[in-house]
Amino acid sequence: MPLPRGGAYNAGTMATDTVEQLHAEALRGLAEAADARALDAWRIEILGRKGRLTSVLRGLAELSIDERRSVGAAANALKAELEAAFDERAEELRRASFAATLASDRIDVTLPARPHRRGGLHPVTQMTERILDAFRSMGFSVVEGPEVELDYYNFEALRIPADHPARDMWDTLWVDETVDGRRPLLLRTHTSPAQIRTMEQQQPPIRVAVPGKAYRFEATDTTHEWQMTQIEVLAVDEGLSMAHLKGTLLELMRRLFGRERQVRLQCSYFPFVEPGAEVAVDCFVCSGAGCHTCHQTGWIEMMGAGMVHPEIIESMGFDSARYTGFAAGMGVERLAMQAFGVDDIRYFYQNDLRLLQQF
Ligand code: FA5
Image 1 (cartoon, rainbow, N blue to C red):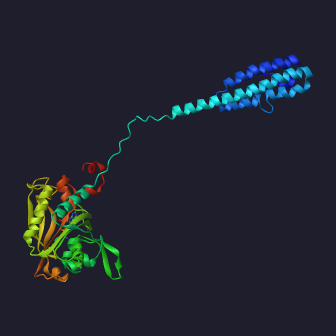
Image 2 (cartoon, rainbow, N blue to C red):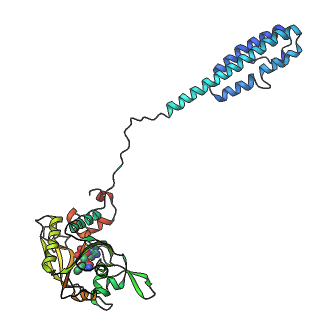
Image 3 (cartoon, rainbow, N blue to C red):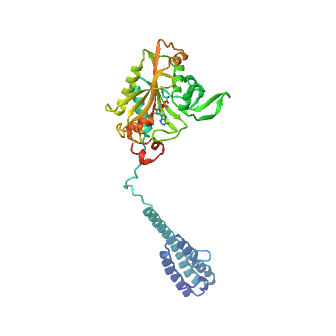
């Protein structure tokens, strides 16, 4: 029902009735205001500059003195009451909205947290550490060398000159830059340059193990990748012989693969050792019968090895009549294949979590 406007009150009884009516309706409207916006609309309608109560108060001037006294007192009392009721309702709504926010934003601290999956070391890293631990326990220290290497250390100083056919064994990725405009750079094709760098810096007795990446431009298959990890070992001392090399490598292989694995040393050629050998382990997939993984040979080649060539011992400034040395360079991925039962080297760098999570 529309409310009569205050300006229409020109009779005392009418005005007093209207104040009473306004009293009841305003309190009802206030109780019905359910949110801040409704509350504000109520305030403008009742207490605003052009609001209904304000109009009643303005209309007082048109009343007689007696009426003005009684209606004015009632209207002012109503104003004070409505203002207090407004504040109270505003506080009530504020509390209700706060309670609603608390209820809807509630966090259940008893819910179990989402599990964090723990990462693990890559199998090749794990294998590298196992091999280095074995060498450390045999008295070798671990050093490193650069991946971008000078032609000199990768080939020349290892008795592999530019026209030597052995260069084909290490199909090379060359770097488009040189040092001093004339010394060619490459991605090292093996870790053997570390032999030369070590002998330049250390005096016998020398025992080092050098882990690192090596790169070759070659066709990939079950046992060949472009990027591989090698560990070079070098020992130089008085009286070292092939027996020390063999004993060291057999001990390593047995620690890694157990006593029952077969290890084979076969004559091989590397320009920087004399004699040279190739070390293979019987294939873990077929136990030597021949299969896809071992290219039907029954063996997986793990490393090249040999006695450091006397010419290299001499070129490093050591007396080759007094000092001899042995060296080996092993493919960590090949050893990891054997240790973890991975039948294709290419799996290691495909970053497929289904494989990597198994180690
Ligand atoms: C060499 O790299 C010699 N520097 C090893 C050496 C060191 C001989 C010291 C004598 C003295 P070779 O090219 O055979 O040799 O590689 C050594 C080992 O690295 C191999 O037995 C194999 O285990 C691994 N390897 C070689 N090529 C690859 C490849 N493309 N992918 C994965 N592993 C490889």
